[in-house]
Image 1 (tube, rainbow, N blue to C red):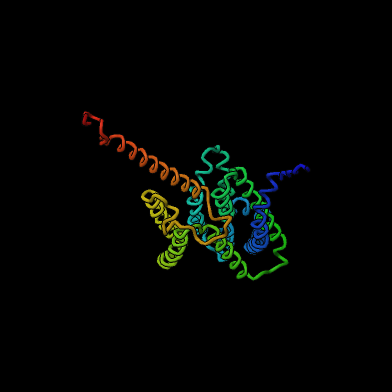
Image 2: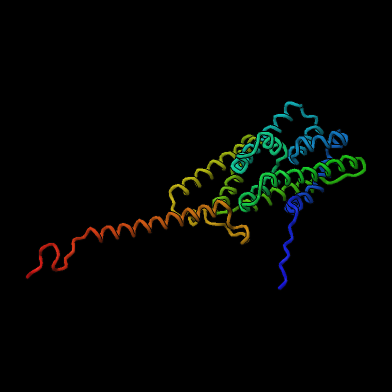
Length: 301
């Protein structure tokens, strides 16, 4: 009988395979961003530094666009602050997975986090119990390398190539739609996504700035957290309630680690109730007086 040969893949190669779709999608968008930064007056060195330090497609496109219309520097800084404020919310949702890491690791992790690699890491943390913070950091560094390379090449060829920036806007929109689809795990998350979209339209119309996006994101997140917290607190089986029931998704992504933990706690509570019921039945049976003749002095001789 032949022995089964087990092949072990290096961890860095496995993580690279996870991050590869994101890295490939970053290259054309990074090229476009580098070309736009070159048009705004950045040389290839500055474009590379901005791509590493900022590492945000939306922020870098915003910087280039505002510089091309000669916007004042304080306005650019204020717009970037509110645009990037969402990372405080994204980072807080990953904090439970990074609680045992050092401050140096947290600083390095937060400096290289963006929307897309956050979506990948959150999904892996939630569905793969073997996914580690070091794996998540590698995803961030792989995506950063792809993005910075695209920006660098775009800035180098910026004087020779011109592109239609409407295509870039479409590509960025497609990336954010992908993030939404991958994070929809239950009916509640789907409803909160719709609520966030409606609130974004309302507050963008009211504030006429990206501050409306921040306000709508915070309100929708707080609303979703409150509803989920109340359901998990008062329901014996939260995963089978209407709002927390699983949304229609591929089978291999349906159950998260939190879902498995909730199911295990539900089974433990159910088993404890059954055991307590059996003990109550036994104790009540023992406490009942016997009506058999010959017991308690009631037998007739």
